[in-house]
View 1 (tube, rainbow, N blue to C red):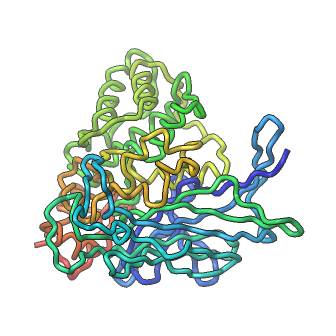
View 2 (spheres, rainbow, N blue to C red):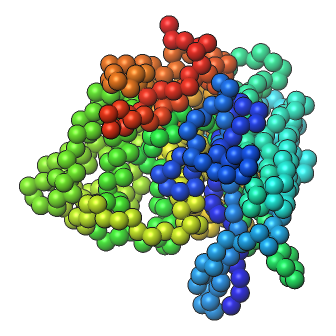
View 3 (tube, rainbow, N blue to C red):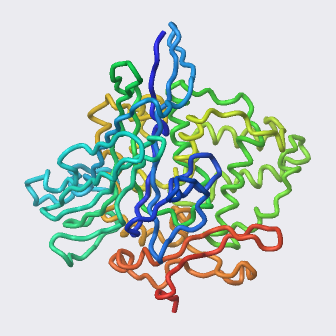
Length: 486
């Protein structure tokens, strides 16, 4: 027997923002928005995504948990390491987009005329490190073709947990003013998203330092402009499919309506707030009692909704195999009818792993928004969603973001029309909570072109919930009044 240390979340997600100091910690419990940390250390749910008209960065927070291992290898959670334990953290954030030298559809060989490939990789001279409580910030910066690029910073909270902040959403070319001609490949351009390993060394009182046995990974992504609208398929679902293939997750013989089917329906329903309202409004009035009824009489209703979930009319959409089987079983009446059943107990480490990835889209990896199609590759994982840090040819600092669009704003512009990932980049939004759907408007208007998106993306609004007469509606908020629609 012995103690095994793991960092959770296994794959944490941070997001860029152009505010110099304001940030919030991303979701740590499924279904919650994340928290802001006050000057006195108190935490409260995030209610605004901008401060002083600028976008707050979303931070990823990491913790170390201890497990006791049985002789047969079984692990038993004993809890998060306490303040009496000294934790030294290290993070290696890297952006290697511009140095991509292979074809990974639709990304291609970038900057082929630059022979010094290292000059295209944005990486700190040393791995960033921080330890103790309330420490930092320690800045992470590198260079691109000789120009300094800020990638973020790391710090710790009052409990010694690691907080990783990404860049400030800055994209530029070297030399300045180069045109952008493609949604994914633009030579001479860079942005400040990144990814890399999160490691730690644990020292308990009177004991020698121990390197954490299972480190984590941090992924820095663009902002999520509709944080209350989730994709039908999330990155957590992608990781779960890989776990099924690896044999570490066994799907239920018959899916639970409450825990397996209803969330898929609700996520698909949410598209009406960020996409074509008329296309999805019919789902808003579904009869949950009927959909949870396994009898033949309810089969037509189940089949109709199942068709919407399996084909939400997004480009290159694909349900993970185990979820597609769940939906087919439900449509056929082979499911557990447990409408309103309580949520099963879930350990804190599992909640952290799930909450981090459920707000990320698992749709449309062309190339994607938070992470690319490499996340569908089984060899990337050790115990999904934990990456295999020992597989050095596939898992290396910058591997998750290198195939993404450079800069990300170019793809952000091109993916208008609602057929890619409207849950991160809205297509249509409601402007008046008392006039739904009459107040629908184009979210990005008057952005027109790649450069325009680079220049104005931080002025766009967020889709947030509001209560109207006891009902929740989602409307645009915090759009810069100096950037009006025509």
